[in-house]
Image 1 (cartoon, one colour):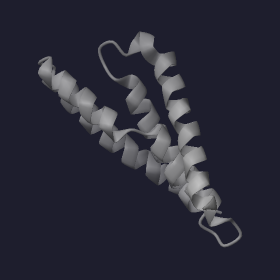
Image 2 (cartoon, helix red, strand yellow; image 1 turned 120 degrees about the horizontal axis):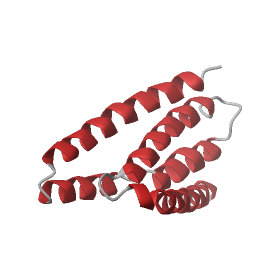
Image 3 (cartoon, one colour; image 1 turned 90 degrees about the vertical axis):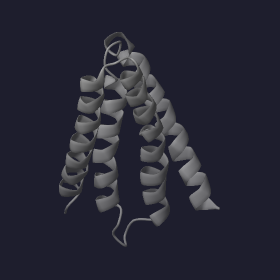
Image 4 (cartoon, one colour; image 1 turned 180 degrees about the horizontal axis):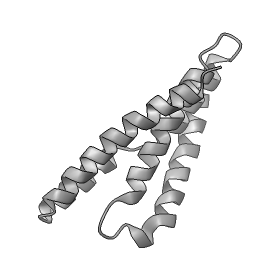
Length: 121
């Protein structure tokens, strides 16, 4: 039960953080979904970092769940990436759509790798 509550709390915090980030970046997202790209890259870094740091026996596994599955899961959003890509394609902005997909994948994977490296002891 503690794990379930920890994931729920982390998810709530992550979702609110994503919403606040989206609001803050609204003025610059008219032509490209920068907010979603940013939260997904930051979340990718954090899941790598938290996954590494909190995987040791001295850390409570519930804390790891709260931070990775909860916080990072609530903060990042694959569904928004998908919807925004489809919107760009429907608007005839194929180049931007492909750039968005490429940046999301490359930066997300790179950020996760950096997070794992940063979390090493």
